[in-house]
Length: 464
Image (tube, rainbow, N blue to C red; front, side, top):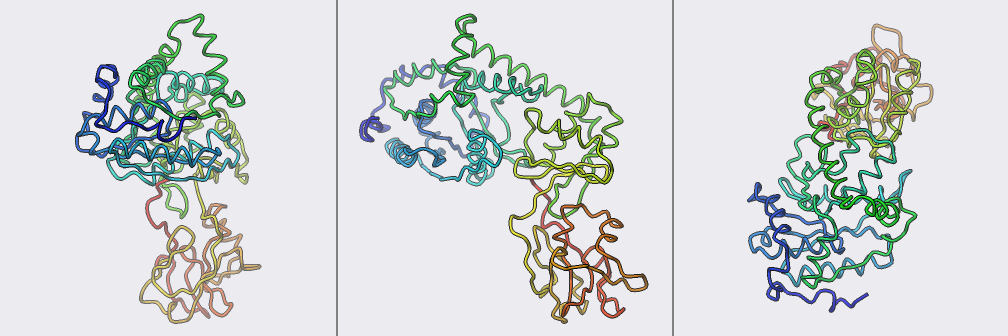
């Protein structure tokens, strides 16, 4: 590998002749950015050919350069990772571009290393980018062709085969004003390499890009060259196919939305997404609607659309499960689960809630808040909150009624199974007084707080 001095020898005062950069590259970049003249620009800079070329093109224009910050995500997966981060920083310094590096921990958790690294990368972008930011990525037609073929091999439907859009919100969260832009998605990598060599640029070489154990590399090195021998411009043709499929998907979504919206039910349980999916109504529509409804539900809850057959298999289980069964599946850092006749998405904090004193009318508890009426006597009694799972043989008093066991309460109030172990219990000196939001809070038959004056509620609207 060339030294750092050799790799990043340019300053923005020493550009080769402008003719070294094709007019098409600049025109596509300008067309992508022009509709957003005041927004801050961010570039995903890996140090590879594509992102280095995009960095150089952006830094040529003083107006773009002033708005630009390059972000390098260090996945810490290769021995050279810190060296690549250093080189990217040096390159940005030489071009007068603001630079930011972020190290991430890649956790596979049942998914492949490529998918896990991508998830960690986009989580970092989500955390780093401010409102209204534009994130520019240097994906090209070869990347698009590989993505289309990968998803075809995984059995994806229309949404998956649409591959990567040239523009989309950074996340699926409602109200996200940040955009991800891919200005060169229609161009083959060969054209980018011609431009980069014409500019005498240097870039890092990731040795993992030649490891055929990864499906994408196998497609890139073994499959696409064979297809190209039979069909010229195969990458551009596949990229064009993906674009047409995106148009079909957008039209289908528009036509189906009014039909599918009634299936989405408001949900106000703590730690649970704000919309549930009505299984009974979905069954009535029929199988042709199943996958479209599932993706709409995921999207409205700020979760990515599904790929492959993992979620369709789970949905088929949910549709035939007995009422007392609750099939679940991990998905995008959440758990998707059937409860009753609906589907829910939920996520609990990693650590179990610990007992704490009830010292305020608003107290944070396990991803929500316990709120009590300021006029009650509960706060003055030295009450504490404990998780229901921490109390053996839990029985709850109810003035004027027989006391209830935990099982009776869960069933009567239709409390989702994932919330039952962590539901807050108010007690004083070992005596259970009540469960916020489910029962009155009472002591010795005296009601201290009505059920509707003490509850456990989400902190904010769930955003995935």
